[in-house]
Length: 174
Image 1 (cartoon, one colour):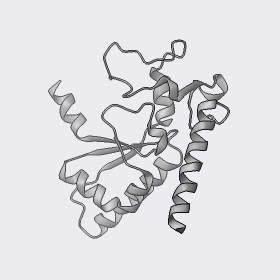
Image 2: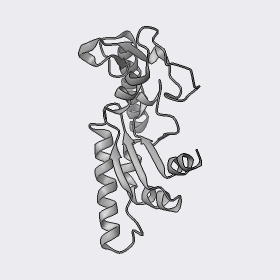
Image 3: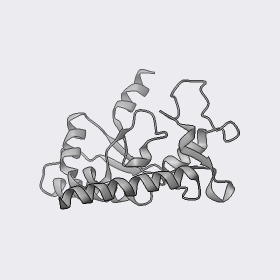
């Protein structure tokens, strides 16, 4: 168990989702938005080295766009550091295959629309069934409301996001 704990401390899971972070995430992951990672890759790499992180696992909803963009920024930063002799060791940078969508669907019980609680919070932290709907086999099971525009939750989430953005633009123009 001690060896497992030591390895876990060397691993950092970064979920780069924005509003779609709400509803469930990988236990012990941290939430940094894509803009934060891409805008400050050097700060993140320095923080990881100070804390002896050996591997960073990046994820977003599907680990296709946002997580991949962050991985490229971190890999580029790491290459520059090593070329300049500033990177004391290489940090392994990987993507969570299938993203949080695959993670949740691996552990969720679609029949009960819940996550097994045999070991509390062991698989999905802060799971909120209101944020997920069954997209059926064509959608790979449960779909986050932010991705499901055909769901009332997805439509409301999109409407709220657009209203907030318009409000922000209106404030900037005042």
